[in-house]
Image 1: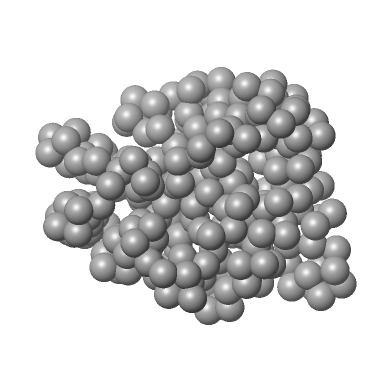
Image 2: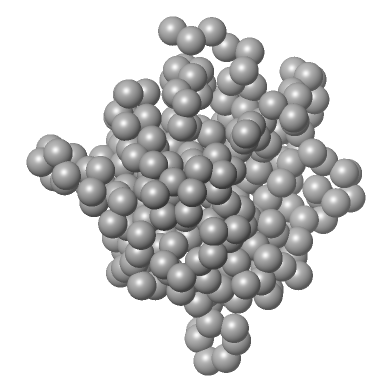
Length: 262
């Protein structure tokens, strides 16, 4: 079964709402100018919360062929949780996607597999598509424990989900040692873990569900590396960080299908 590639631009804590307008407009113009085929890759942006209403207005008003989502979601519905943003709030803003369990949330906010699972369950219950992030640190990679460590995170994050819910979410493999460092896992490195994740889904939920689940790679992705990554059988797109703030670079990543594999 064909899985539509997904290119997700994670802006992290960058760009105010005015700057967001300029980037989204320029991205839409560039994709149109380059004759991007949305059937060959889905393009979404993941702005900070303060930009979401602006992005929603722009995308809806100009009928842009760009999706959007949030960078995190609360595990709670509402109440005395200062600073949290609920799934229902994101749905009202037209979000389709939400990132959950990014390595920076795990590192700086102490989010463990239980919290990631609770957020994933909450997002799914409200019709959002979670982009569930998993991946190992450098020490784990050096000790060759990267596959079991990542699968342990997958198991924790997806606990209690039905097969159909698993098929409709997105898993992003992001080796921590390759995020923002300029170091990129080789296509073979990325495929090893992405392939192991898909095999885990086969073992837990069957081949049909595994064939439908999109698995992304994230970690210093650039236009120069995208074609080789996307040539691997179990990589269905990328979670793009810094390069998503550079319109020409992100647009080129979205059009990976036009690039030769080097």
